[in-house]
Image 1: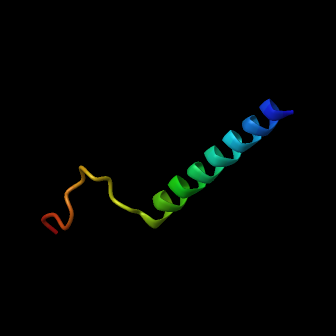
Image 2: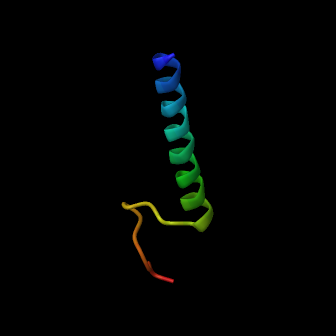
Amino acid sequence: ALVKGMILAAVAIMCVQALIHLIQSIKGKPAPDAPEGGAD
């Protein structure tokens, strides 16, 4: 039962992490290596 609980917790954490990455992608947050405010 303990192992199943740990697996459930790990899956839940990974789902939260994926959701955070998805929200950042939708907001259009630039990558750290992307130049900000280039020659427009």
